[in-house]
Length: 259
Image 1 (tube, helix red, strand yellow):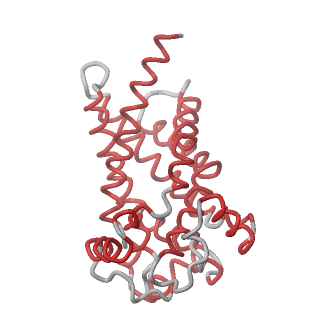
Image 2 (cartoon, rainbow, N blue to C red; image 1 turned 60 degrees about the horizontal axis):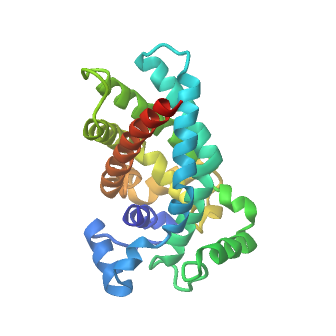
């Protein structure tokens, strides 16, 4: 996530054209060289804080929406849209807005660090003082679009794969099915994710809207810049979503057994 976000924020339109033009490997090497291995975990506080609530909202919303719906790809897609929108509006936007601001502040493009060197809650307070509390909801529109899109693809893919199995999926099957569905969703939604990252960064005020941000990125570096950071995001999402679906299946069975 650290590598992906830094690559997304490096384009010329964001005045960070001197960033990691060598790609993911250069970003990792430069960070380890200047800040040590722990530098790769910059901005991880919001991820730890919101990991549980994000998964809970996503799966609870999907289960509620799909309870009486037919078990078809269309309804998986539709319920996934709703679940993703709920997750993005309630948890994902503040999670990633804080995280991206911390990563942006820690990047080479920012010479005077204001937040990234502070403990997590002090950094949040400093961001609120400088940018306002509502800055935690910067990029809400692309976050909701991205959340709805990714989760619709993930649930369609996961349900489609696991329904072909004989019986309930094993933990390994759940992880692989979820990982494949997650990887596909990452590729499909990467342009929206890149716009979202820039709308949540410290320079969000330079863009009039999400569409203006997308245009600025394309004008500065071409259409392919919308896929900056796609490689590391696919790897992260494969692992994250695979684990989430595998854990959800196992926890659901335990809860069903208790009740």
